[in-house]
Amino acid sequence: MGPALFVIAILGCGEAEAPCRQVATADALYTTRAACSAATPAAIEQHIDAAYPVVVAECRPAGQRIAQQVMPSDVQLPDAPRTMPASTPARRANAKPAKSLGA
Image (cartoon, rainbow, N blue to C red; front, side, top):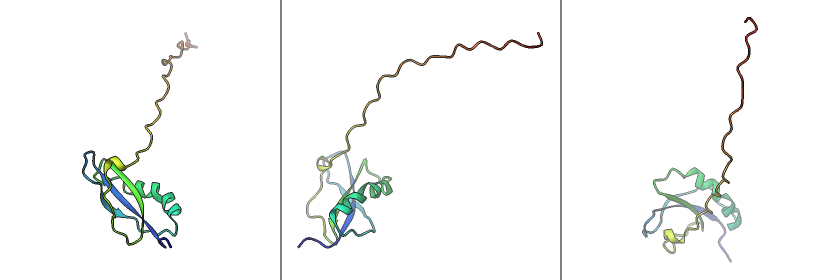
């Protein structure tokens, strides 16, 4: 039988090969891993100001200690943002000054 509850662990990862460190645990408990996983983006947003270049969330069974170290190379980063297509050069309007009515 699997675990009854899951928690979200917030991990801070550096750029070197030092293991990621747990910096927080979200307060909520989840009854399924799927529900926990669905809540991870919001949990990351709440902890994005952690003093690490990369902040990730991991669902774990409640009460379980880290079984293995998470290395920065193990973290799946989001896809790189798509580059915007080259835009056409800006064009200026060809406005002419209005003629004065009193002239």
